[in-house]
Image (cartoon, rainbow, N blue to C red; front, side, top):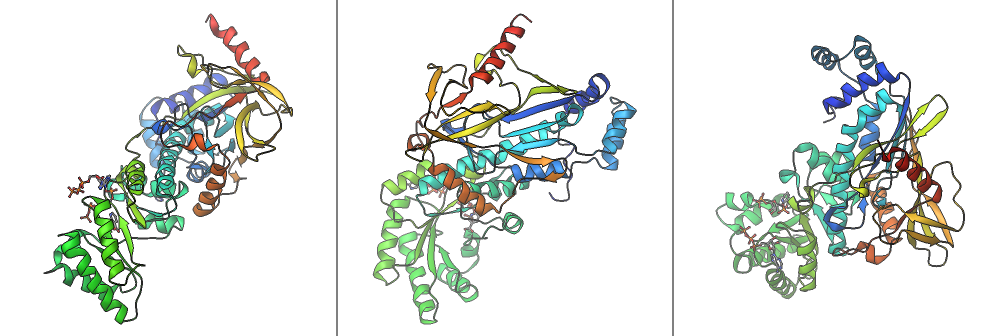
Length: 478
Ligand SMILES: Nc1ncnc2c1ncn2[C@@H]1O[C@H](COP(=O)(O)OP(=O)(O)OP(=O)(O)O)[C@@H](O)[C@H]1O
Ligand SMILES: O=P(O)(O)OC[C@H]1O[C@H](OP(=O)(O)OP(=O)(O)O)[C@H](O)[C@@H]1O
Ligand SMILES: O=C(O)c1cccnc1
């Protein structure tokens, strides 16, 4: 991962276009926005993640000697362009929304401005990073919301779509609220607590379950979470665990727990809790795993299952219920000399109409309640009045206009890079998690429901609407 250079993780057309831009449009600059249209799991927002990796990739963007040789060999590019790539110097400006921010449809999360020949090149790589990490952070937010403050350990590496997804996915899961990971590379790289219990193979390898537990307790007396479901949870697993806890207690240790990974979890956890309480271990923790997701976790807690921690793997690390986030990278303006020319993509489907120009998004905080009630996208250089009637950003919204007043407007995008100089803070993943929670707290509860989440209003200013409509009319007949 660190050793890899991902400049060639791109689609061929990015390079054929960039080669052509150099020849046909010279020094013209482009402005591209990354935004999302459809939210995963029918939620109303995503939790943004991936900025740190995106910034790292842009800062270090270059082609290796052998990449250049390979590109030459394709016989598609001018010598000039090949030379440009060989001596690549990142010279774009980037604006971005901080990681952990809840983001609604059509809001630009990253804006890249720079020579078209460069800015075009980053589409595929940036989308692959931002789409993946945002998807997993969003899924993790759902899962940790369902867990209602109980610890969620990220256990997904073995089921992730490859080691890179496992590792950056673990980081994203923490942004979305997970408390630890079993993936050691993620733990080391991002400063996440490494956590874990044991596999069934450990239990099976010994002559008996008791022997396996005892051997574990000898080596790890202070990290004694025993896997209780290899043979029979209530007949064997819990009674053997209690024996070990008594022995460890006599030896002066006291941090105990069991993990249950199969069967009817509520029944088993209730009975195990009773047995451990009766044996004098009310503080022994119960961890549950086995294809958990937000729906199962919610259901288990509604059933009253006495669970302290969850281990969550495949369904979180792959966002299996909603495995695709189709964030896009769209050209919103070109700059010729000192002239900014807004651009638009008009599509057959009206809902896909893009927002032209260089923009900023503001979260509007109600002055009375202190809570967010709407977002508004503006042209970056326009002043937002303290009261206005604005248009919905979604061209298909049934009610197109809304009156906005009595708010404090908080800008979401910040300057992130000026060439290779990084201008934005890249905080530790737990600081991002904390920030994310504070931003989620501002949102209406109805927008955070796991089922049938309410839509959150996103507006555009009359000025942005006007620029968009002018372009629509201009291109209507083309
Ligand atoms: N009380 C419960 N309510 C809701 N879902 C549950 C409950 N108990 C277990 N589950 C979930 O049901 C799913 C299937 O569990 P099931 O018990 O059928 O499989 P299993 O015992 O793990 O089988 P295997 O031994 O093959 O792993 C799992 O995702 C599990 O987390
Ligand atoms: O179900 P997930 O949410 O993906 O959580 C991770 C799963 O990985 C392990 O199972 P596995 O059968 O791979 O190994 P084991 O023999 O240790 O149970 C663990 O016991 C969990 O069931
Ligand atoms: O440590 C564990 O219990 C663990 C780790 C990965 C996958 N399943 C369980």
